[in-house]
Image 1 (cartoon, one colour):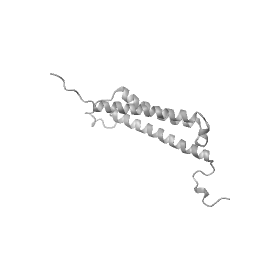
Image 2 (cartoon, one colour):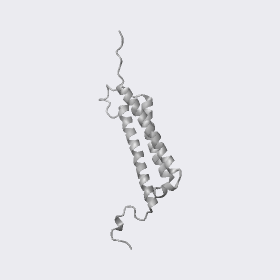
Image 3 (cartoon, one colour):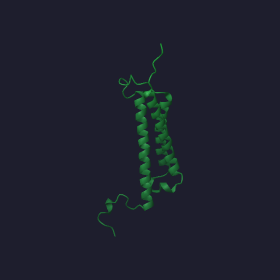
Image 4 (spheres, helix red, strand yellow):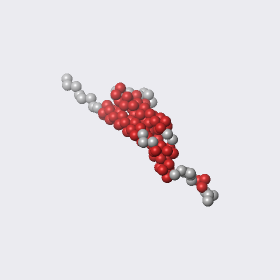
Length: 133
């Protein structure tokens, strides 16, 4: 028997396994999108594209540092594409390749983001040693 408020049920018609799958996919999509956004923001700031007039005193970023940020962003986007091509949220957890192929690039991209951030921190905090006269 249907109640008058059944239309308000967010997961109406889905089994408990499908609801779990939808929630897992939403969390993974959010993590991948956040990784991509943070990596692109860090890349833009360190490349000096956002405020070149205000970053003259900050040392230039190295190619490795910028590559790490772009690698993190690319892996976040690749993770999203892999999730789309592996299946939709209702039955994603039925595919045994879904979690490794979607979470793996996010973890590797997070490692790249942290590596780039560590290199940026080291470059910015590096103090020039006084030259001996």
